[in-house]
Amino acid sequence: MILVTLGTQDKTFVRLLEAIQKEIDKGNIKQKVVVQAGCTKFESKDMEIFDLIPVNEFKALIKKADLIITHGGVGSIMEGIMNHKTIIAAPRLKKYNEHVNDHQLEIIDTFSKMDYILPLKDFDKLDEVLKKATKYKSKEFKSNTNNMVKLIEKFIEDGEI
Image 1 (cartoon, helix red, strand yellow):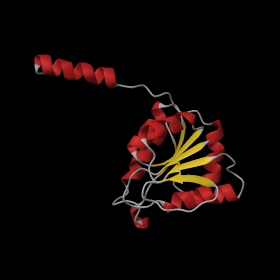
Image 2 (cartoon, rainbow, N blue to C red):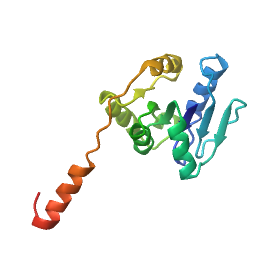
Image 3 (tube, rainbow, N blue to C red):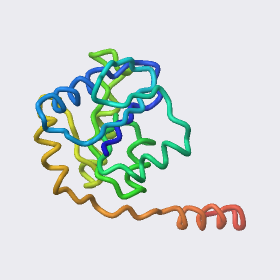
């Protein structure tokens, strides 16, 4: 199953769903596709599309997914990384009125350089990125939470780091 998550932005991201539909139509995507679309309105006979999915159901879908295709939101990307999923991330762009600026390009570049995700910048090349995804193994995520907690505790106790 492929989970597509577009976040909860107040702007649409039809461009990504059109690219996915194109790959379904070409036969390059044969798996079930479930979409958390947020404010994006899109009709498809091939995808199960929901505006918002309750948190518990969303987490269950992430665990079940073989692949996550997401916008360039940090929360969506991190959720996939922490669940050891293969992730294709596509930036929302200002020129298409998908966001207020192009910061998602930077987010995707950073996660890509760290080898956690596969970037999708040219939507006409989704088929190529989907092929890469079948063999892709991302870097293992290592949390730094314990170190941060120790630093905060030290600061509270000693007033210094």
